[in-house]
View 1: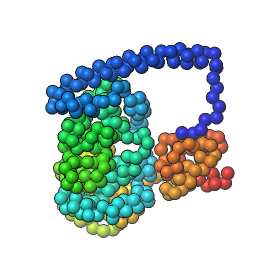
View 2: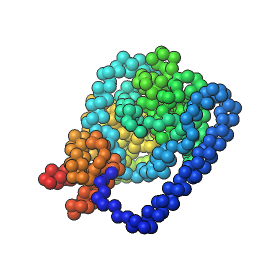
View 3: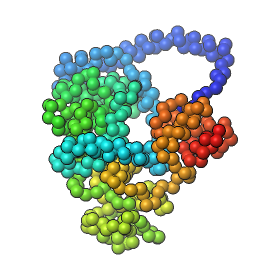
View 4: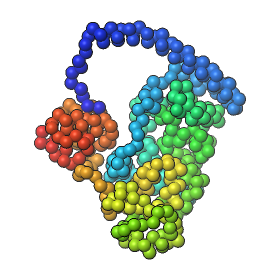
Length: 407
């Protein structure tokens, strides 16, 4: 978030309004808490009817006396995902996520060998999912990010009409997790929407796919990386993963119109569609669908069945594409033969950190210097561009970094 200079307050009217609001807050707060406690009391009957013991219910809700306002704020401010494909990729598929994935491949090799043998899912796909979901577990230790799952889901079920049904279902599943004993109440944490652990499973998916591969009797996706990766592998396996097959290929396409829908790789090749690296297709009879996520002038891909299976983890096509591409690069694959159509010169991760540091030193940024270009950095860029008579596009570009270096 950019730093703001000066706050203009008309003291009479605003001060009076604030005073009145402050006087009403305790009453409103008390009513909200009473309503929430009544909701919990009502939900208790639902939980007991579904096999949750009274002891588990009481332990789960001990100290949960009011909705979490930060959960409701997150629910209200979730962005519409309309950003360009390159914007999505640039924060997820880069030299640091690749290097970290390769380091984790070495660190967990014995477990990855075991998981790959049991479930038939590529280790690189699992590492890419781990990166996408929690930055290899890094977000689990960020202050304020992980929430009490029971409180978060109760908050949504009670106060968010749009998510209430989903939240009630997930809350009941979370209580079943506690009842089984896979994790204790103090460690049952997740995102504001209830996604839990290294690989960010919602409670119902955890119940369906959770795996205890380290053999300690608990399916612990919060503290056991092997369990978390095996759980992700189990999800993909049960949804039809083709062992030994890839997710898709970057391809070159000929001029002119191409058919929609699925065709065999051999048929695509007969139409002039070839692999971007010049190699032959591994299984010419396999069915594939052509995708142009950035139009004909951007990179083109033939997507195979495993691409659709990745979408069972997250149904967004750009998510599945990012997982596939990151997995290939963790495995030693190179950059795209044809890059996305960015309207600027992109930066490396270290250059993005430098850009954030420059904005910080100029008083336009107060966030974390981590190379992640999120809404806070973009707002800071826009503010800096406006203050310096530059085109206000919000891009973290080489052009902007060079301008900042001169200041």
